[in-house]
Amino acid sequence: MFDKLRRFWNKDGTAGSSKPVRTGSKRTHNLFEAAAVYVAASAEDDRDTMDEATEWVSPEALSFGVSELACRAVIALARERDESPREVARTLLGLPAA
View (cartoon, rainbow, N blue to C red):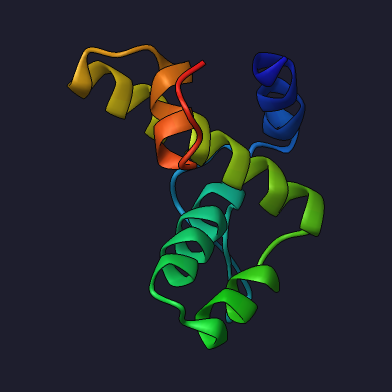
């Protein structure tokens, strides 16, 4: 499912790019940059930065970016801890073991 969404967002050549795009004098941010800034600001309880990141991309793109970031983080932690992604996700959310 995520591969299909990733291919969809990459059609215009900017969404999957790791570099921000400049249009005129204004800097354009990609969805992954927006997601990273939004999540980091949320963790630091920085409402102003969260609000700024929400203006960089559409709500749908930000949602996709945050979901992709969550998946990558859970996978990385699961590998680091030698646990399943399900176990890591449940632990992070404070849920009992399944």
